[in-house]
Length: 326
Figure 1 (cartoon, rainbow, N blue to C red):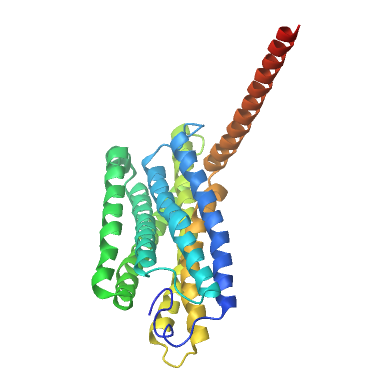
Figure 2 (figure 1 turned 30 degrees about the horizontal axis):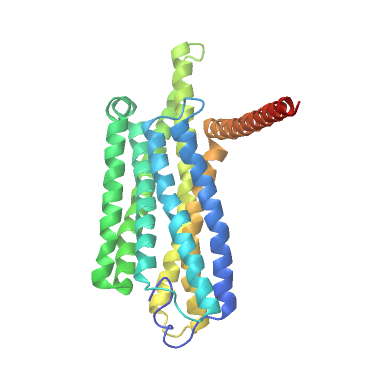
């Protein structure tokens, strides 16, 4: 049974138009939100107007944003086209493989990027000296390339198995493995933080080195709490989505309308996860907020400068015309 409902109800009934239109409308909104948020994150990191965002950690964040951008630029518009065609023409606009493959590629890259960020936090907290020495931008790029190589190749198993089999493979490998990595890693991190907090009382608060150490620990705690929020959002989106997969595949007594709602809910929940991640960074990290605000100010200043240049050129042309007429 498919993300787009070709089984078991595709040969029995087309979904009511209101289901298709609702899903298409929500997909449009999610596309705009996903593209806007992730574009801002990518620009903030690579333009870096305040010169404080270029780090291996933020490169992993950018890799996640690129994966989510693929959702916003490709998967969401395909969802809109599919569901509008389903609602208006009562037929499917294209072969479903052309919709499923981009969906699985982007979802795999997004989920694995979350896992990479989790491992990054684990390494930074448990072995800070080794982390700073060994994790370079080059090694970060190598890991990101590995994520995309796997994400581009693994979903093509779908061509051999079909959606019904591959959806369960995807659910029980990529999603569950990522969840276990995130959960077990954060349990270990919190144990390390608990030991660090116990050591605070023994530190000399007047000592500058002790103050610097406490400040560094507080920063790592804030970053880790941010990714705890991302773990909660991951669960909030992917756990109900997994339930929907089981419903559409295994519920033999469910009505086709219920199957179609579960089919679309599964899809929209995945879209939602790709849309909310960038706003977590902007909310939690002041340096991201400042970088994005400065980008907007620079764009505004650039617009004003262009406007002044156009006005100057127009004034010069008017002056020339006036001289020639005289």
